[in-house]
Amino acid sequence: MKINHVLLPNLELDEKFQLPKEYKVFLNKYLENLYFEIASDSIAMSEAVNGIIAELLLYKELRVDWYEIVNELLEYNETPIAYSENYGKKLFGFDSQWLQTDVHCIYNHRFIMQLLKKPMLDYEHLILQLVQPNGYIYNPTVSITNPKTRMKSELFMSLAMGFEIVGTGKIPEISRKIISNLEHTNYIAAEYFKIRALKIINKDINQYIILANENLLQKCNTGNGYADFDVKDKIDDYMGTTKRISRDKMVGSPLITNYASELSKKLTSESQEAFNESLIEYSNHLRVNPLDILAFKMRDLEADFGESITPFEVFSAYVIINKNK
Image (cartoon, rainbow, N blue to C red; front, side, top):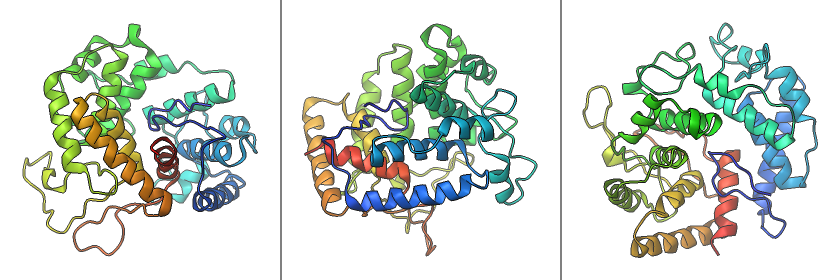
């Protein structure tokens, strides 16, 4: 069974594939906590996606009624919402903002309904309403951040998701132009989403982008997987200045490594061979050390900058371990 989700390229649920016991323990614990929260009507749309894929990986079937959960807690007036009301109440200063619809939750709702083979909403209409005059696709009532200072991976992810939902024939021309004329970003995730969007509109990747991605992959290879970016390339989008990075640490991520794998498909055969060798090494490493998934470390902070092991990192590691032997 192939899982068709833009954030999880190449994820297949195959009985011949191995799910390390450490990942089974992690996902069982995740589901246990998620079920507990759902009993209190607290869930995010992204968590529903996590729960569904985790159940399919662990049990080869769905154990709870995800359609009822999404229908009752993650829809409002026949529109997908990112968070249930009780989930929003748990977030500091978020009580009045929990009712929101963004591209990510629309995409995830569609993904869930397709997988469950349940009635679909008018996702195309919802996405076209979010197309901005500059061509980007996002909900300005959720976030008013200027596109110049938004994370490029977020902007390009929303374009890729929106394009997939709307389909080639109905993508606005302004959105086609903006994705076709973007400069290289030095971020693996952003470049992956860009290529995914370009593929939907049948636009070839030019040689400049291929060479830039070849250089990007070389710089982002940590020896144990690929990082999203080389810390030396961190630039303040607003000021245009280099950020302080002397104590930042570049760490490999299974999720980003899968995106890197997609970028590698456009490289020269020699570069692709070198990439595949590093991928096999990382696969072997994860097979022996499945929990060696580190969080980003920033400057003098003791705490991790974000979580390290998440369901999506586990799903991605599962792909790497089983497809690169």
